[in-house]
Image 1 (cartoon, rainbow, N blue to C red):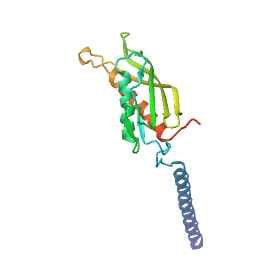
Image 2: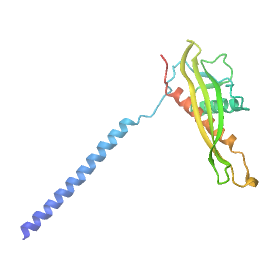
Image 3: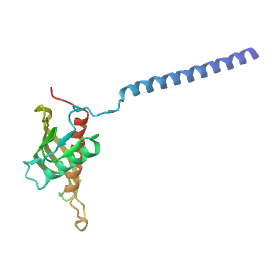
Length: 192
């Protein structure tokens, strides 16, 4: 009996060690694989000669009050925040690159009605175009003529608590737009 019990204990120990080593090997395999996939961007991928970026006021073809100002300001703020040493200015003169933008369209529509048939949740859609030019070589670094951003806002049920959420929704969309444009610049998706 002792031999069976000792043999059984030895088998259990071997199985336990094998399971532990297998779990450790799998953990190392997954960790090594994920570490290889994630490579943080450590430097600005724009051409080295670009030190100053101009962001002139965007054009407003949507005819929505001050929308171009919100989007221009969001891009400037994002470049200052994440531009990794880039100087940002409003004037094209003296800039190495220029970010030109056009707000092409603005729409909002009700997407959810309450029990009385009134719209409570609205969707805002803004369509924009962006071109980034290298001033020295007079070439396009990036061009997207169909940036589309959507956001939602809700009206309160009680008219006494009414607060127009349209402006904050547009601000959120402008920040998302700016993050997208600046990420594209920093990570250098170029047209060749």
